[in-house]
Length: 483
Image (cartoon, rainbow, N blue to C red; front, top):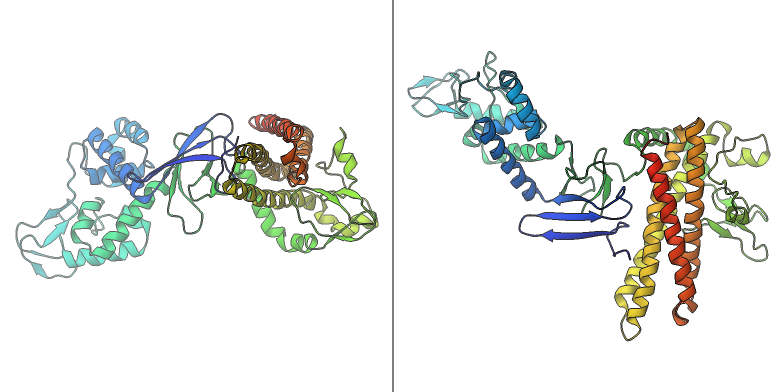
């Protein structure tokens, strides 16, 4: 049975306060098959890993750690890339990052051993009061301090700083910065260096949730890209958008841009209340399932999304997910403008699944609260029963999110891909509606608690497994882009 969780993901987390590491084993919607691992890191943990990697590379290429950090950053913090480039063409790497020629051991800073006039302020300074980036261009500490202050105010570009002399390309590295900069500029420089390790690493991202300072390391995720921060925020580690399995990041980007450009008109259309197709009474959706029941005396049952009779959704002819071109009828003209009709078809279903998912998540939180409050002799049996419901709601949350993004994919699909998508999507969506309807309507029934609930929970488990199979088949098809 699914564990309780933050948000809607069923993760087991194990937080180690000593090293700031959280390991999350994914076994639900963020996984694309099998148990996959990624790490959630505090800033201190990121810093420790960064320093360890710098030390390792410094030993590998035989340069001081401050210069190893510059080389690593040039190679997107990948030791494998450093090894490949350094031993293939060492001089080329040295030239690119500002190290002296091959055979020369780089020096982070030099001091003057005799009184020297600063080339910037033209004041003469005593022995040991001047600094250089390992070259012959010596400047006083005050001029260095101003140079570094201007650099850190320019942001992360300060990590690529070179000697102030226009003819010199030697890198200004961390050791020199720490020696001459004031405390505030030193801290800002170190902050840029820390953030660089995550932002320039292809398999790491800072959590995009507002106020969260954690990073997620997906280096061991393989093809998995959807991850979950320990703050409860899930996102794609490649594009930082919300998890969108099984759809590719490029499709998500195009779809979000499309939504932004069409949002004003779309929101105007979707803001209008829907009416019962039979009696035309205004209907407000107050539950997650798309199975609607009009009140007395009508009692008409219909689908919230397509407004078709609900009995048609219970047969093998389920086609709510299929786009049908608009005709010239008055009804279609009232639903949307003709130029937006196809877009609205996909957008409304994309948005509706998120609304249903949000309501299902609230129901799941309610179940968790009920589970936590249970006590007495009947508590164990009740926990078992609620556990079956938790499994069902975990699958519902999984399915709603997947279906949401398959509609974004469908907007751009055509031909055989669209036909296959509609087939897989229709089967998965019909199974999910059956499961959600069954879980949502029946879970409040007292009967399921007092007769042992055997038949109810047996059917619930069957519907949960059936839905999981449909969605796994759809995910497998997306691995080959529905080819």
